[in-house]
Length: 208
Image (cartoon, rainbow, N blue to C red):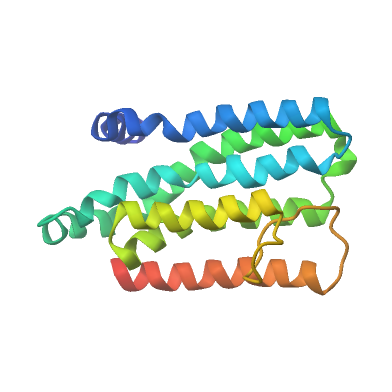
């Protein structure tokens, strides 16, 4: 426990104000969820903000932490340390953000009732959460630039959420309406699982 506390304290000191950005995102998501619930009769609108705002910001801490590897002249020095701690860092931040997203889920249950979270939505939310825990650092390992990886991360997510997946015919990983078992739902799960597998392969290649 002391080791865990030490690492979180170190991360806060290292990232300074940047460390608070995911929590700012959570506040925005909370505001949007309450606003949409009060102003709309669509029970899926609050869930869209959970999956489209709260879940994506949950993966940012790892991206910020590992971006230091790609500072000029730092890779050879920092990579051995980070590659030995990648799994540990992913687990501890998944636990932290998993607890926060569990509270968001409880909020949606309170707003929409237990019946809203059927097996399909629960499975989708879990896969989406794990996907966003790894996709950011995966992009970072590919482009080796914090700015570019965040730009790709944010552009895809914002475009998907704002247009509800209607803007471009690229892989869709969000649910914008009641999930009915059909080819589109199956493709959503396939894209999520494929994204996870490819991300894990890339992380193993980059940090082995």
